[in-house]
Image 1 (tube, rainbow, N blue to C red):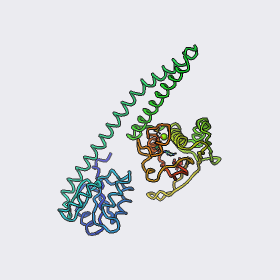
Image 2: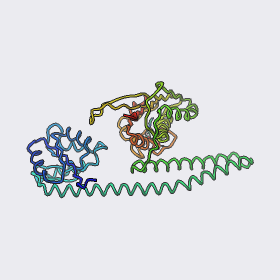
Image 3: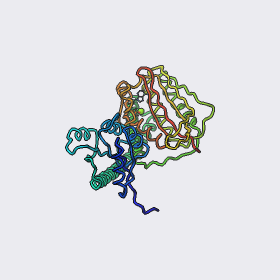
Image 4: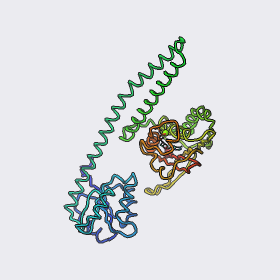
Length: 377
Ligand SMILES: Nc1ncnc2c1ncn2[C@@H]1O[C@H](COP(=O)(O)OP(=O)(O)OP(=O)(O)O)[C@@H](O)[C@H]1O
Ligand SMILES: [Mg+2]
C-alpha cells in the first residue's frame, strides 16, 4: 500500500493563461494536483471526465462566463456535488458574490490568489464534503434498517390474512362482502410491502450496499419472462404487447431479478398510461459507441419500451427519474403510484454499467431506452 497522501485535484478555470501559470507555479510544492481549463466549456468537460475535488472558477470569461458555467455544473448530477470557489477580481464585489451564492458557489477568493488562504479553504471544503458523505451514509443505513424491520411483520400479517381467507372460503364461511373486505386489506398490505421494498432497494442501491447476483445471459430471457407475465393485465385493458427482437443477442452480465424489476417497472408504467386498446412495443438490439475517455468502441445491448399513450410534457421529462417525482400524467390515471419506480430502474441500470433515458411527445408516445454493456469486452 502506498503511504503517499492523497493529493486533492483542483480544477482552475481562467481564460488568462498568465493567471493559470501563476497558480500552477504557486501550487507546485503544495499537496495538490492542478488541472487547467481556459474556458467554461473546457471546465464542464474536465469536471465530468476527471471529477476534481474542487473547482476554482473565474467569473469574467468570454463566451460562457463563470455564472453560466456554474449553472451548468449544478444542473448536471455528475458535477453538481463538486464544491466551487469563485474568483472575484475586486475585494468588494457584493453583486457577484450574491449571484454566485444563489447559484451554489461555496466560497470566494480575490485575485491575486493567496495560496495559503486557498489551502485553508480547500481543506475546509474537503472536510465538509467528507462529513456530508458520512451523514448521507448513516441516514441511508438507518432508513434501510427501519424499513427492513417493517417488512418482516408486514409479510407475517399478509400471510396470516391469506391463510384465514383461504380456510374460511374453503368452509364457505365468508359472504361476498367479507371476501371483498379481505381482498382489499390484502391489496393494501401488498401495496405497502411493494413500497417498503422500493424504499429498501433505493437506500441499498444509493449507499452502494447492493450486491448484484450476476450471470452471463441473453437479455431476451428477461424480456420474454416479464412480457409474458404482463399479457393478462394488458389483455384486460384490451391493449397489445408487441415484442421485436433479433434471433440472438450477445450475452450480458446481469442480475436477472434486478433487470426483471427494471422491465416490470417500465411495463407497468406503460400499461398505466396507455389508453384502452393501446400498444406497447418492446424492442431489443445491439448498439456501439466510442468511449471518449479511452477512444475504444464499446458494445451494448439496448432495450426500448415504447407506448402510444398520453406522453410526458417536455419540461417534466428531466425529473421523472427523481425519487418521489411524478409527472402531471400521474394525476390522469386511477392507479396510484409513489414515484419510486423509475428511480429504482435508474439505479439498477447504472449499477450494471448502463444508462437509461426517456423521450416523449405529448399525445403520441413515451419511450424508455436502457443499455447494458456486452460482457467480455
Ligand atoms: N409510460 C409513461 N407514460 C406517461 N407518463 C409516465 C410513463 N412512465 C412514467 N411516467 C410518469 O413518470 C412518473 C414517475 O414514474 P415512476 O415509475 O417513477 O412512478 P409511479 O409509476 O408514479 O409510481 P411507482 O412506480 O413508485 O408505483 C409517473 O408518475 C408518471 O407521471
Ligand atoms: Mg412506476
